[in-house]
Amino acid sequence: MSEPVSLIVNGMMHAFPLPRETPLLYVLRNDLGLNGPKFGCGLGECGACTVLVDGLAARACVLKLGSVAGRSVTTLEGLGTLERPHPVQRAFIAEQAAQCGYCLNGMIMTAASFLARHPDPSLDEVREALRYNLCRCGTHVEILRAVMRAAA
Ligand code: FES
Image (cartoon, rainbow, N blue to C red; front, side):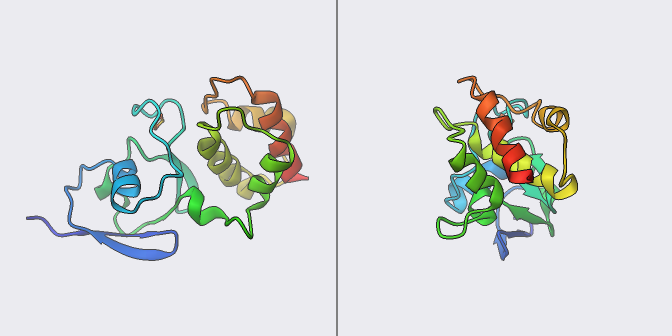
């Protein structure tokens, strides 16, 4: 049996006695019950599973548990709460930027990571930042509006 893998998730240290190759998304959802990150394509292409690793957006379905050992992972649950939503979450609610909602985790986590580094973006920069997050409902206009609202 290999050593447990330790990492910080939403501010709390956890140790997982699991193979290092286990996808981070499975650990978050199955072992910690954090269902913010979604399983979409499982191939790193849709963005539904996005989390922050040391503050940067990353796709949890293709990240191996061992690759985040000792690092800090933030999920949607760690970004804000019902009582104190993150500004990006507030803006998504204000703009009603959801249809089915499946992509929203990825949209919000990617936007939060992007805005932390680019607090005053142009609409084109936001569009580029979210380019690889897919929404099958076509809610892109509202999503872009929400991110611009969060930046304002
Ligand atoms: Fe991870 Fe699609 S589920 S990118």
